[in-house]
Length: 479
Picture (tube, rainbow, N blue to C red):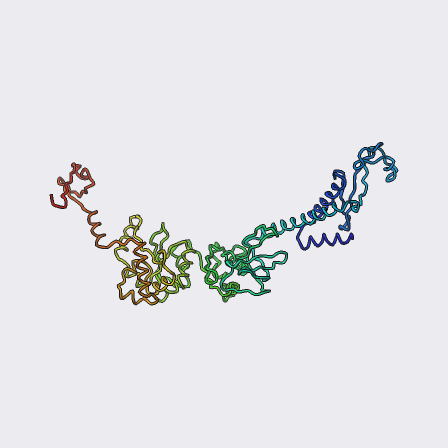
C-alpha cells in the first residue's frame, strides 16, 4: 500500500508535470479536511510523509491536563503516562491517528478533494507551460479531424490545428507528423486549448532560425516577412556587418538552405531579398524575381511609386492575379504601379512636367492616376487581363478606343461595360478642354494703368507704384 502511494506520486510528477511540492500540499490538505470532518477541527492535526513517499502519517497534538475537558485537544496525565513515563502536566504529545478511524463520508470527501485539486493543478501547470511557448515551433501527430480542423497529439496534451491556419498546399492523414507554431493558448473546461498554425509569417521566421544559424544568432536580421500562404512568401533581410551577405546566408551554398525552407512549406515560392533604407532600391528588390529598370517616387508623403520594367518582365513583376506586386506593396509599405518602358514613354508629358516643377519648388503634386485594381467591384481576373494588355490605371483604360478595348483577351463586351460603369461611378473625369478653360480663367492678368506692372483682380494696390486699383467687369450681355 505504501509503495502504491509513492508510485502514484511519481506518476503524477512524470505524466502531468505537477511539481512534487504541489502534490504533497494537496494530499496534506485532503487529510486535514477529513480530520476536521471527523473531529470538528484540524488545528491540532499534523501530517507527515515518510521517506521517498512510502507512506503518510497523521498525528493529533494534545495537551496533558489533570482533568479532561476537551478530549480532542487534551489528554489526562494518567493516559499520557502510558505513552511516555516522563509526561507532565502542560506538555504536548503527538498521538498517531489511524486514517481508518475517519468515517466513510470523510474518506470520500478527501478523495474527491484530492482528485479535483490535482486536476486543477494539472490544468494550470499545462496552461502555464504552453503559454510560455507561444511563438515556438512544436511537433505533433495527426490524431483526428472534424469539420476541417485537425486535432494534434502533442504528447501530454492535444492541440487544435484550425482549417484557417492550414496551408492550401498541404494535406494530412492519420498519424502524419505535423510541425507547426503555437499561436494561442486558451483556458478551457477540460484543460488548455493549444492553437497551432502553419500560415503565420512568424512561422516562416522560426523555420528560418532553424535553417539559418546567422538569423538565430542575430548576425542576420529579418526586417519583414509578408506571405500569401501556399503561394508566395517575401522575406527582407539585412546585416549590420559589412562582411556578411544576408541574402547569401539565407540561400546557403548551392541553395541548400532555401531549398530546405521551400520543402518545409510544401513547395511554396520564397523570395529572399535585401532590405534597403533607400525606398527606390528596396522597391526594386521587393519586385523580384522581376528585373526592374528604374523606380520613380511619385509622392513620397503618400508612398506612391512607379516601377519601370521591360516588356517581357511585366507579367513577372505583377505576378499571377497581381500577387507579386501586392506582396511587394505590403513588404515596402508603398503603393507601387508597374509599367513597361513603352507605357512609361507614352505617359502624359504635361503631367510629367508638372510633377517635375512641383518637385523642384517643393510643392506637393495633387494629380494622381487611379489604379483600376483599387476601384470597388473590380475582380482579380479583370485586373490580370488588363495588365497583360498594358492597362493598369483608369487613364490607360479611358485612353483606349473601342477597337483596342475589344482586342483585350479575356474580357468580353459585357465585362468591359461593367468596368466602364464602375469607373463612371467612382472616378470624376475632367475633360481636357474644360480643364484648360478653367486654367485660363484662373490665370487672367491685367496691367497697372500707371506703371504697366502685372496685377490681378485680387489686388487693391499696385505692388510696384502703390496706386489704388479698381476693376470693372462686363456682364454676359456686354453691358
